[in-house]
Length: 334
Image 1 (cartoon, rainbow, N blue to C red):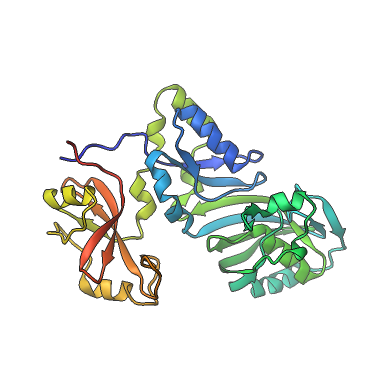
Image 2 (image 1 turned 90 degrees about the horizontal axis):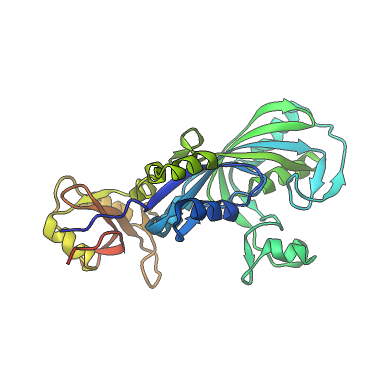
């Protein structure tokens, strides 16, 4: 018999307001729920609004998988003004006339689609030798003085959706780790006039959408009525890109005790052809490097018991043919 997970474990899809930091929102959720173990899955700047995924209880253990999802944004970009933070909250460092028209802006956007190289803003959570860049910036250390590595990011969609000079609105769909502030800054440099983000809304993070998000006020009302757990998405909602394995009762118990299993499986399982594809060096989102490194990925899967209870995230070990528990979320009753 497997014990039930407390209803205080899960993911809250919050519509973050403008002003507070992501950490401020986490503190507010802790205060409202009375749960200490709370974290977020992907920082939003104070200026930004929209989808902020907050992990409560054991859901903090899947934050890394939530952060790996694609992001979608609506960005309002102000041309002609450059700031040190690349957004409206920073200090103005340059101004220039905006001579570009809509067609020129649309043409300039083409170079930022696909895989691009991006240098993180100086005011960001990216760390240099363990210290966040924004702290170094406040000490007066310029990014040009630091060996900050540029990173490759993917821009899947970049469209001009509104043109009201000197401002324009962009629709952006991108890989995790992309800084829309840096994208706006680089666009301004390409146009020769500079630019910064005047407003930013995250419309989606992975499968979570803004239209389904709740506000802090709605969370507060639910907490006052004792109903805030009703707003939680289940832990396995963070793992939907991985295939599902269905285990019988004995195999489920052994898995939850930390044992590698060679299941009898109930229902549809991951087939050997899929494993062969997923374990190739060019494997996709369902894989990760094995312990000790190497070029081969391990396929991950969601494991469920016979009653469809989510049990664990498991990894297939091709050397033994066993499924090894990676993160277990249920414990057997004694």
